[in-house]
Length: 118
Length: 317
Length: 104
Image 1 (tube, chains in turn brown, cyan, orange):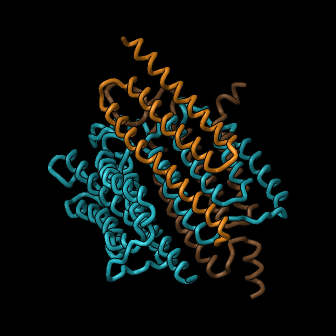
Image 2 (cartoon, chains in turn green, purple, brown):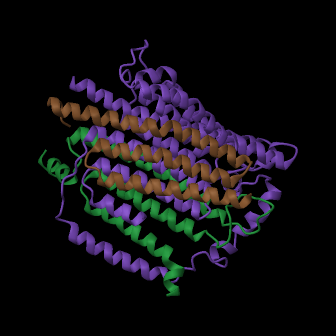
Image 3 (cartoon, chains in turn blue, cyan, brown):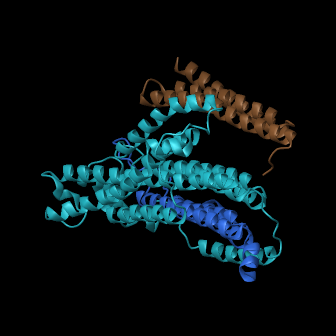
């Protein structure tokens, strides 16, 4: 099963991505949706970082005794992505607090009920 | 293990348990990144995903309640959709290169040039910092702008309490003697460590973001045990707003100075006589700008969230 | 001499891992929150100390040793403190419930 051994990192990523996707669309609680979004984002980071690894390489910090480095470009992209992720999470949580103040609840079905009834 | 944690998050109904599992998930991802030789990324993910993220979620939960209702009506449809999408994605991965091979397209075009030339052109050992701050400095500028925008967004949604005019009694933490003493001992080393990470980012993992987050964590620790009112006497919200904007301004002004010296925007080689020194100066200053903005915005967001809770307590009394 | 150091550090690492395992087992099997916290907190601090000492023996006299010592000091400070904070929160919550206080 060399196919399994060589591609298992992508399949783990797909599995995590699907779990995050499921949480976002199926669970009604808003905070849990934000958590699901976080899981989705982290799985994408794992995809990029695992694509950047080279067998036998080391961390991309220049050192005279090392000849093979893992690819530093995905690290740069994911560093930016992590920070943008925390920015959106903070903003999303602030929105949840405001929604709770306005509607009194954070369950999606109840919010839709109260929205239609007002 | 990551998958087990994720499934635990799906199935758990208690939201505080969900937040704890999120912290564990972030920590496991950080360990995974270390295994993949991505030390800078692991540092940032550990600080952010296992530190700031669960903290903000717990603050939110303190205001909205911790139980979740069961919602079974849409689960079957969602499960079908997820399975179909997952199958399509897995079919797509068959064309991807092998895990860890050195001949993948990701490794053969631009990356070798960066790895080989970065030492000669920029002169700092950490290649990730050199790419982030110099070769792709414009993207990092955009990232700082995103953090600043998020801070403004949270400010506009949840307003900051203004600093009180006189020092109130520290009411929140009088009973927590052990915690206050230990935090007083620990906070100076935490802030010192943040400064170390900031300026050592050229030589090892580190840099502006991680340092900003650690610095913010030190101040948040202080705020948690001494109350938002006392903390606002120490680091007031007006100062934070100015600092957040100042970091972005610092970054942009480095670019403008480069233009005034005859190069393009954010070209550091023209900042000094020797291009290498110019690169060092440029990277140092922009990392400082990034660190200042990140620390200020994180503390500001925490003040907004914590101020909401004390407003709610006042409204209930 | 090097063999002795390697053997000793391996023994310390194994002992630390075993303690973490028993701590996790205790968390799962103890009936009450406070006793679980006792299992988790005590074993966690001791096990982390042993693990770090095992790593220190492997590192030798270098900058890594200094960093490991700093990590050890930090954990010795924070781990008992966090157990204390958790225990205090649990104790006050139980007090609230027995007094019939505010439920949230």
